[in-house]
Image (cartoon, rainbow, N blue to C red; front, top):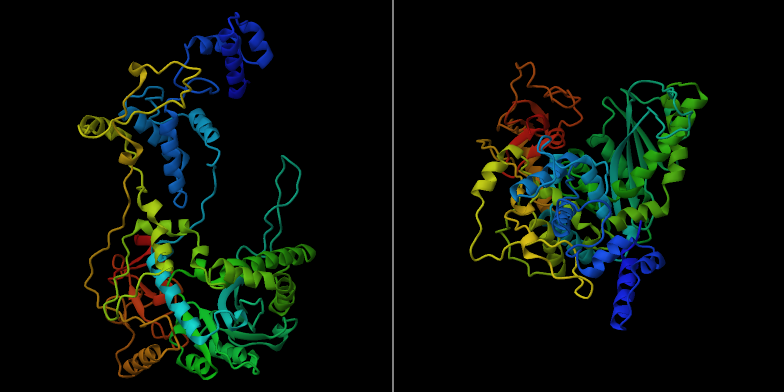
Length: 599
């Protein structure tokens, strides 16, 4: 109930009275400064030394040791450490170093120690982690992102539009479901609360939106899941909307080409400067030769993001789609409540979408997406360096290019290289086998040339306290860093045939056009689709000839991803479309593939 600064003031007054030759009245001083008399007496006589004031008994771990543990947890912020892991790590550290105070029966630090530890380090807090696929964690690393930003900067500088935000575009797809649930409602405490929904699961409708760095929006395309489009479904659509229908409800090369024609028709004709269109690596984009030729003819340069990096680099994902889905769910909840759980019909879909679109399609949302991804204004440092930490789990690296001269180091190179320096210095996984602590303690030896690790229990004020007694200091043999090892995922060996990849992310370059033409020409000679084993699935197989994600049969003429290659898992031998597999597993640089179930 008392503060340390009050105790310091009482001690200072006590010293002044003692220096003046007066007998300091401890009980009067304690009452005046509102501190305990017994504690003031022990401090004045030098009985208490070596630690600062804390509530309750002295912690098992010293202030320095807890500070080291807190620093490790901060470095692991993007991975997250659960409460039991921290408790077991603290117990293991205390047991190896001969510190008493934790329960041997439970094999971990107690609940109250953890609560006090969190109070002593207010920068730490309990949070719910965001799910991140292993593919995104591995591919979003400074080497890949830095190389892409250099390529993008060179292109816009060469085109002379680095300061023209109205000519920097991004298009992307997202899915909207007709299943609406409120996030929070008000209801009486102690009784159940329900919300009537139209169905258990919703049907997904695909949206393709486009926006530029100036805050303007291009044509919108809505793709319904149906064999043919009915005219009443187009009622109430937002301005400049193209409505299509496919059997799967997904985008394909034909409908994307139709959107491309609408896009170039909306570009201003009085400005001859080129445009840049940023998009993801979906097969309907990368291998759509007619679309790429249309863009090149209309002076639109198409650039593709690196695989599995769009969750950070794509402007539409950073702000606009999040806002659109939020308002879509709000409008849908109102519709469901007013109609008693009626299912949203396709003829009413665009009317609800128009309300959500007017609320979300603001200039600030569009500009915020480009600004947050560092694309405009061009600033790769806008990407938080902690977002690269998950890539340390794997050993994926980009091999240095050998077919071109090494570019001189720039400030951007240095910035991306230094992003992971603090994280690389700290191991990132726990070895919490408490049963092995006896062997660890027995095998731990001190280097005779090393400086012994001696913790302190807070700052020592020489004016108020006596020097600490060396006999009371416990020498720590093992630090937290030695109890933690860096996790890594080994690549499985494979004899799979090397799959060809596009030569560049610059899709309207001559090199990419040549690659796509040769790819189409090779298929015309009967080579078939490439697969994870260097061959196509057998037609007689009953399970392997189906994509394990979308269920489409190999060779189906209505396959929306018919232009894609196929691959199989190196472990369970299941077959996947290229994009289906990469979104649900890991495709390593050496072309070995493991699906999500086998990771």
